[in-house]
Amino acid sequence: MAAIGFSSISNAPRRAYLTCGLIAAIGHAIRYVLMLPDWLGMHIIAAGAIASFAIGVLAVLLAPRIKCPAEVCFFPALLPMIPGMYAYRTVEALLSCLYYTHGDTFAYYFHQLAYNGLTCVFIVLSMVVGATIPVFLFKKLSFTATR
Amino acid sequence: MYPETPRMTTLMMNRRSDTADSAAFLAEYAALLLGCGATCIRTEKNTRRMAGALGYGVDMCIMPSHVYVWVWKGDNEQRDMAARKTAGGGISFHLNALLSRLSWEVADNHLDYHTAVKRFKSICETAPTGGREVLLLTSLANASFCRLFGGDVAAMVIVFVSTLLGYKLKQIMLEERCDVRLTFLCASFFSATFSAGGHIFGIGSTPEIALGTSVLYLIPGVPYMNAVSDMLYHHYLCAFSRFMDAAILTACLSAGLCAGMLILGMKWF
Image 1: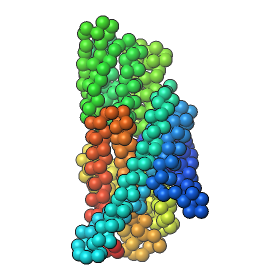
Image 2: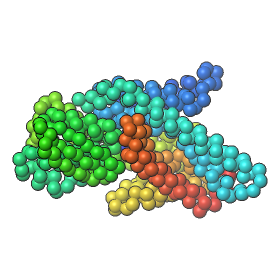
Image 3: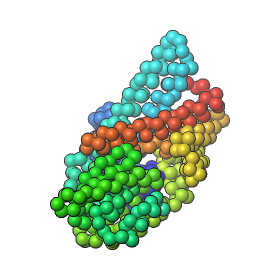
Image 4: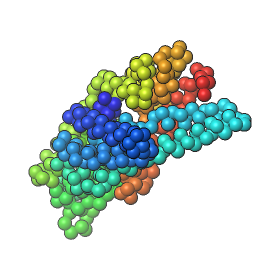
């Protein structure tokens, strides 16, 4: 549902909605499974990169079916994996650093700011690079999707 | 409706197809494609494909807010150049798909210049997705986001309503041609302030997730991803420009969120 909604923000063709939703669901499921503690228990950054790569591959493969560029499929599919809570906690920690300026409390919130901020940045980077690489690898297929 | 310069119509429809007209057409095409959210590599490939099919050689320079196209025929002695400002109609994947398909139609079906121009003009008149449909789907999407982040039903309802209000405000401000940065700031402030009500009045068990999720619909994801793609294909200027545009919008939405939290005096952290 999140992927379909966000594909509508970018004015994606209606025929792309279901494909976006499907790719997003598969991507999210891959990340969830990879992060399961009693299975692989991967870190969110690595799991996000692998799931994003899968999203990119699926987008490149499915885009010709709906006659749309691959970006139309993988952008909305990536959005549900955005580390919103890390981003929020970064802002929260930043404000706390400004509010509590002395002693251990400041050090604690500064640590929170650095940890959440860095995690957020690396998750987003790994997601974007992971999803873009398949377009780069399967260049011919990617650029003939609308043919 | 997407922007179209008057010069394009007079140049392309009323006079014979020479290199100057073709340069103007290709520049319009590239500027619209770039403006609707296509990456630099796609813009370049599609424009080259069309120029090749129409029998022209083409060289182009893509800058962050302008596109320059040089066109020549055969012996390469006479070149004509056209520059166009990147279209500012906002991200539209539908338009992106239609323009990409047009380039293949010109290449595969050997469309002549005038037919290509007519198709291009009809694509320019394509209406964007309905405002109410986008509003509803975006609100549902953000509420789903809230669930993904572990929010309860109350948080989802709060996020749905705050997104509905914030996105409506964004639509109104953009229709009134307000500055896009101010629009992001106001929409973020509006959504954050509304969703903060969940915390202030103790609604549900996850009000902080509602607050954190309420502004996520504003994150400019397409420019961030296009920036990476442009960087991979050595379009560093455009990559940097897109990244900075997106970073400024992210800063504006963060400022709106912070302002909302500070004005309401929220000190749970």
